[in-house]
Length: 261
Image (cartoon, rainbow, N blue to C red):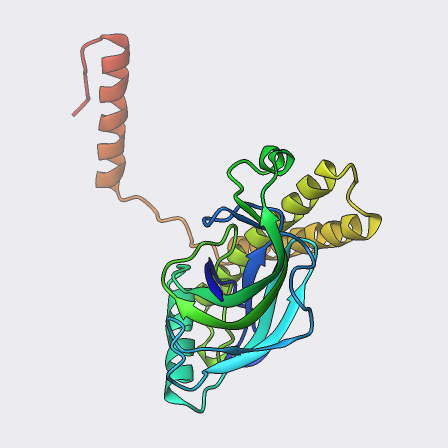
């Protein structure tokens, strides 16, 4: 059995829920492995082990494997009724509130089908050592150092009274960036296979653009409505500003500075 460490993207529907992206497909990870789409059993249940693959303690949560053409993830829930599950949730939430992606995850797995990278595969994926075609994951676990590519913390679900403007701003920034990176990765993958972005995905991206434009217009209107009144300068401030401007003109044109009393 092997273990692979990756960063985690966390999304939530209820308090303590998360989405942990534990594999990105068709990319060379820091272990030299390339995981292919279809490598994971979608719909299977997995436990969340204690920090650092601690199998000597009870699991701190669990979830269900999901995947698309670009990545595989675990839609899960931390067990907030136990101290370790609550502590992990609070640690991940703290990182999110601070706007950092410190929390990462690792998963333990067995290789069912895989092979050493062939010359043509090494040409397609420079640095590839092994191609992973089918895996059986056993658990995921919080860790500090990851091997994943293009993954990171998005957000964890907090109570509504805990959400702040800074938290929502960090979440929006991360999600928008992640969506754009995912879309570009999907285009690049299809280009390598001689395909184009589907009409359905083009429509999804278009809907996202329109939603962002509408939100941007609303935020710009809010900024305009709440703009502070311009501060009136005092006579002393006006004289000081005039003197500074005259000094700058004198330096630029090389003429003596003359100010009236």
